[in-house]
Image (cartoon, rainbow, N blue to C red; front, side):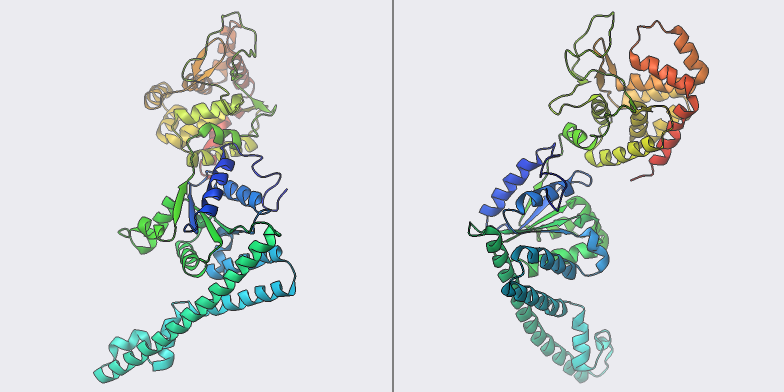
Length: 475
């Protein structure tokens, strides 16, 4: 159990993030020159999960600080927020001894002096104080001698102030280093002292100016031996945000690299693992499933027809042991070529539809396909629901190569499964009645259940489209 997560570290890990953390820990501890590591991954791909489990695993072996930059963005000053987190969390490590208390107090005092000395905006105040001239008016002084004298005084004072600033910064770094050393030794408890890890999360969600300021402070004020910063960002998105501040022609990617000694990009190619981790709650009895087979040799129903083998496009349980609903999500994700960032949003939208659904059971595939289609191809969604639905399906099949679900006696494309739902919607309650009358009794189970649902609860089944359209606004 940890203050950072519920349960044991990595208990919910489905993407081998534990192995990544172990690799990076070894790398950081054995590479003295790497003091600031950027962990790069797109939004919605589990950076917070990764950092929180990593710090939960490490905090018993070394002193650790976890700093959520987004939660302190409102405070206005990145330096103050970071100092406060470091002070509070390392105070818990070094304990209440008088020497430790004195060091914490000294750290806070030096930090306050550094804040004042290292704020560039104060330079204008220094000039005005010692020359009597507003820096914005220097160029308007008509008297050349007066201008030269004012400028000379300003430069002399700024040089003097700069020396004082450097001395204050060096004092701060010296005290910060003492705090790092003491924290490392205290956590080691007589064993081998390990570098202190400071984890920075959610930086890419902050205001660009706050993010830039925080990176500048870390680079210039906090780099001391025995301290490692791990900064998780959607680096591409952060780069775009910085470019918005400095202009479209600004080389923000190169600018960011100067703050990091190394960059590690998380592997997000295993979509099945992500689905297993993020769709873990879709297995209860309130869901109306397709009853697709996900394991070879397992039979969900009795059929007169001979079983067939799953084809190469069929989605089964696989190495992550997906259930039937998770396999359907994977099939849809691969069909529509969805990225993890998009899947995070799709997951929230499906959940929103489910919580508002009034049908007797939640028809998971019907909702999921509608959400995927609305998200990936809104034009075809509109045509399918309100226009020429057969032409829409033709275009959908042409644009998106459909994956299959396996039903023991056949492999059926997700498009064909959706077409059955869509036909029931477009033909209305009477169409569902006629389909039931034509039934031979040997159809797959989902066909019969869909017919019954659209006949008994047509308005509620139709309402899925309204809910999906409302959920589409959730980002």
